[in-house]
Length: 401
Image (cartoon, rainbow, N blue to C red):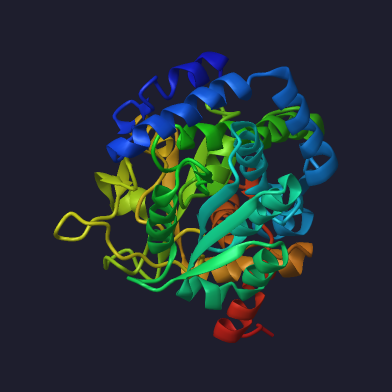
């Protein structure tokens, strides 16, 4: 898409049409303005850009490759390709924005990074960034997710982060965001809240998207170099939506490319609390300081949600995704827990790549697309690797014959 799009959205108040904004306490407004002003002044400087490029190349190992799944394509039809964000340092796309946020924090003179995490990938990435820059790090994580994703909890602690268990509500991602934001409010001068997705009050959805754009920029050039054309379909999982915005951002103006954002249908779409399909079943509302599509209970409060993937069980979604849905720029669909698990094992056994359960939702949808449109190419953003999920998957589902 032309650069004008990224200058137009969000507007100065942080809105993507009607979505986004900053619905925050008055005592935070000045701090958010500082972060926003610093982002525009510091992140556009040659020094910042040069340092970030150096980090991406020599520390993160970018660019990550695009890989053709020859056996998966042979079995299901279509031509399935993966953007291998699982090979980014720490095993997921999250480090792309964490290093950017931490570098910004360093320039702002902050001493401590605070964040939430669901699957633990954002927590590990932020703990990594804190270690790199010599900053303190505090990660808030629901007790349910701590038990489910324990390998990532150990990684965070080894990297020097303090992991704060969240014990209220459903004890998952939504509650972790509440807890982390509360901790940030106690000392916004010395800390910075490094949100884990394209969500939250302005300027966070814009900042995270901009730092994740590297995924789409690389993938578009790599795919064209491999095939001589652009992909017919681009698929990414959506919880908050950072990995999806990262790859979609490069293809928004290419009308021959169909974009698919895949949410968790969980156990069933029929009952509130059994899924986290915000775009499919939600309606506009305000959550965590911004407006977006939300899943709401009968009182208009954020509803309980479920997904096998801890990084997707969020009752809101990025404001830019909300706008793109209304503009019909992206098709949002969903995949069940069972379809996700089936795809998890299919990719593992046919390609030797164990995906994160979040990414397996996108793989499952790609398999469906391949069967439906065998002559088309499909580029999946494989947002993370599945090491963190092994114990949970094996203990819950066993290993198929």
